[in-house]
Image: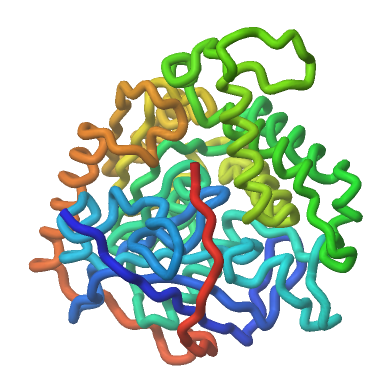
Length: 403
């Protein structure tokens, strides 16, 4: 197995406004994306990788001074999502801070950064934006959409919003909606940001400041939820930073404290505060059953693709029980669904890590998806007029690692 090597981000501009669920429209927006592998003659081997909270389009490979893509262990030649067979697409969602139009970019109405004025975006809005990009790339149907956590929500949304355009949905470590506890964690993180004196109501760009303190705390809160108690105990336990107690309320006494502070410091240097507010709110809002009176089975009536749902036993933020809710809703409609609950000690972060059972499962699943290429007819091309105006060009985008 090898890496996809050096990759070059691309960008596409869309002049046609994107209607958003909040009632606003996003106009003159740009999406940054990367592709790996080759689109086959039938255009039937495209796989969309949907990113989670603090990741981006940079799924695999490397580029100038940047770390490998956040799912580089999964995507590449000979890897479970094999780029010798699949054309893999990673898209940076609107509202992000890694190149696609977001709070850091200029509002065309004012000529100054959007800041807090960037419209609220949802998972459904992101999926609509991704669909427009695929239209412009001439891809009428995806072989699969895959994602973990918030990315898994996007993959599920694809199966509901564009059922005829998706053959397989792989949703990992995700949920049909956030629990009250998860919304609570997100709200505490948001409050840490908005109460930072350097936040300035979200218009900190104009003040030449960054709400780093708030971002640090937000990241520390989030990171605790990504790890299991067992993983944290095995990695840090009660180890002391200096070997002896300092009897201080302000010093960093324990190794776990040092680790969390390091993660917070690193995050505050590359992530945008307004983006964090937008993306955590998109997490809160995702709830396909809401439009069906809370009936998840009814919500999945539109889905026609095949599903692979994966959870991890120690993931307490997106617990296996939440994945089983999705499976039940699909089984109620007699949909083709397979489910795997993997005993892994890592907590929510397990979906990003090397686990032989997890990767073996995905390899076997994508092997079966690839077998369809030789027998399936070419999917229909988008009708004339359905491809929005878009100009592709090379672009560089800043990247942060996902932990």
